[in-house]
Amino acid sequence: MRWVETTTTVRFNEVDQWGITWYGHYFAWFELARMKVLEQFSLLPEEFTTLGFIAPVVSAHCEFKKPTRTNDTIKIRAHLLKPQTASLTFRFEILLKNDGSLLAQGETVQVLQRLDGTMIYKLSGTLEERVESMIRHFWPD
Image (cartoon, rainbow, N blue to C red; front, side, top):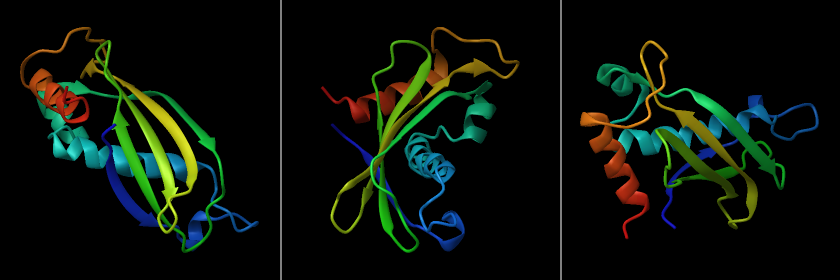
């Protein structure tokens, strides 16, 4: 399975009064990895808009395995699941960089829509080319 990875360090302002990372930051970290993927395929939000589309997140899920704390360096990995519809489903893992232990895992689903919010069911044109390129990266065979 192919992944795109990025790293970050847990900052003091990301932890709660018990010294562990507030749960909402895990979704922001998922976003870091997802944006790294989308950037590689010219599918950042402004590029979607230029093509006449948006890709809102309609589902987000995270399972927390171990807490993170201030100054932990973490690796966030993103993998695109093979789409069955005009949507993008990413799977994520957050690992402690120094020992690779799994801290959290999750998934987000984005649907593809026209700028006016109407759903699209089949990709075409430049959007299709870029999404297909991304699929081939994660699913080469």
